[in-house]
Image 1 (cartoon, rainbow, N blue to C red):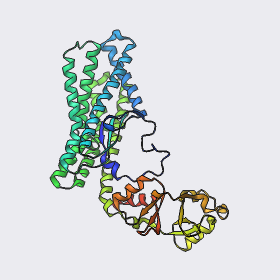
Image 2: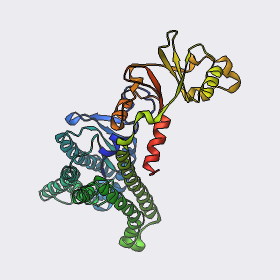
Image 3: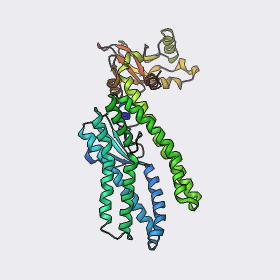
Image 4: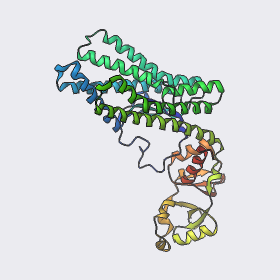
Length: 402
């Protein structure tokens, strides 16, 4: 399955605080290379599906090439690797077009149900959106045709013949599946582009494609197991039926969640231009680093402030008291704990302008992930404190339509 998630990446709130410089990369993923400058990762879930493909395909080889013995599992694993190489070509097609349109690609991930191309920006026109989505299935169709031509040059009853036949069928299935009209599949992106082009409203396209994706998820959940039963009849074993049911449930969940995330992200994008940092900024009290936490909290209550700013002897801001750190201090200890021990030093990236709005605000926060930021006026004086909790609450309300 392919999923070009440009809309999701650009409108998401920043992560709270990374553990290191590479925290934006998938945890546990293996970097396989950087074609066109885009990192390609294989996630741990790939090994699960590779093992499943090896087991299932190896079992089929017992019927087709019984003379292979246990070597059939090596052949089956080779098929799994070759199949995912085809998936990578599919994703690279999205990547090349995205780079051509200067949309930016954060990374490609090969995972349980195919690949994901994380495109940073949304296409500006429906025609570009359509082509960006269609090029992946198109390359899969081309690969299926190439494997068909190669298959005609070999004996179908040999190992190369079986591998080529499997790759031909799998690429055609990938192309057909991705052309289904529902998010997060490429066909859903194509449907979104068509509705967008007809109505002139990107949101209308996203709503249509998201609901189509949810309907598709329900059809997959019930339709795939039913199709398997009708196809195999009484010969279908209980184990095979159970595997089909589990895979259908996982795939349906992925499609449903992807469709829901697409709708959520579209609502976020719609709400972003209305998001002003001054509207989500807390009033802050100014205290020195040696002030007891209990006293600082008393001052905050009296001033009806929701944050504590640490200043030096000249009144210059030096740190922000982390709300999470405050909650970990028992009430009876607060008179004896200085606020300086609970504060994060004010790095340059933790100062943001009160005039920031929408995408500019999210971009500024991504540069220095944190839980609190000092909001300053144009002259550099403190205006208040922005917390990530408040920002997430405001964005969640926008998504819910409140």
